[in-house]
Length: 184
Image (cartoon, rainbow, N blue to C red; front, side):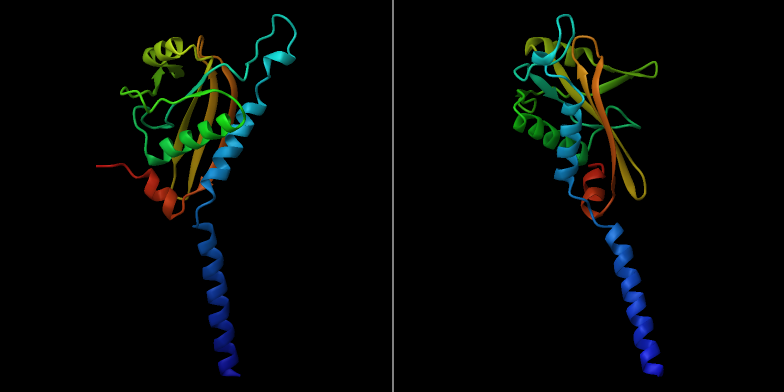
């Protein structure tokens, strides 16, 4: 009887510990990024379906994507912010939209804060103009102890109007935690 109770106790402990450890595993970041991209695209209208004078987006209008930045320091990104941006850009390209590859440029592009509003940096507007980019994918993330919260936006380049946005969160497992760490 005593050995049965011990076995039951050990089994219960193992089950509880395994259940707890499931929360600390990483979600599939690729799937989460693809869902974010699909949601951004679902929030816009293909211009071919619009009435005259309405604005939309053609699949052939180039879109830029920027590294997602830390909400507490808009001049800072991380491996996490760069990977999420890459995956969202990849998915948008898979959906038939023209994506401009920004890694080939030497300058860094970030969203800047000004009077509480997020606006596109002048450099980003200039690059958008040079490439005739219609829109830019920008994003922020905020890391907490157990989660990372992400906001992705598709912004019209000429006037910073948000065309579409999507918010989501992911648990911070070991992979995500490592990608969020600052390089020293």
